[in-house]
Length: 117
Length: 107
Image (cartoon, rainbow over all chains, first blue to last red; front, side, top):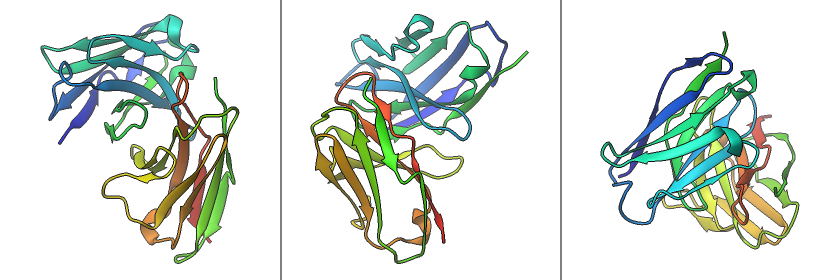
């Protein structure tokens, strides 16, 4: 069965770049027809879709974050990653990676990222 | 972006109660609507996809209906493990958007 696991620094300084990795097990991210997404959730708030990457490497981003977001694949490690630049306190959230084209049927456990000096 | 609203924002109920949550989209999304359950400290769990299809392994007490802009999610007989926050999500247009959530707690 497919499992996802997020990893990365839990603390990022303002104006720096947040970098997270999602390791996929039980499936190859470079084969089949898979979409891999990043979703975030500030404490006590709702869910925000950040963007996604397809098996081929094509991406879609939320326009609200597009200028700061990059999602990429590392097929050698069966991982996909998120980079969010110029972070502020408003980017503090639990970040989830998820699988799915329209419905997110598999999620990682989430990783908390705090933006603070 | 398509805006999703949910009502109520919270509700109190007892075990065995029937619970219904509504979700409205700011424009026609056909049946491109999913429902998730989230418990504190956990990732959301997909319950219903395409408005009314039950995800594999999800109990049949959960159901969904609707099309266009108006959708409902129901739990026919609330169980102790169902106390959680429920979100709707549209995937008709990018960016995907979620409703603000409905928290179901103990009466």
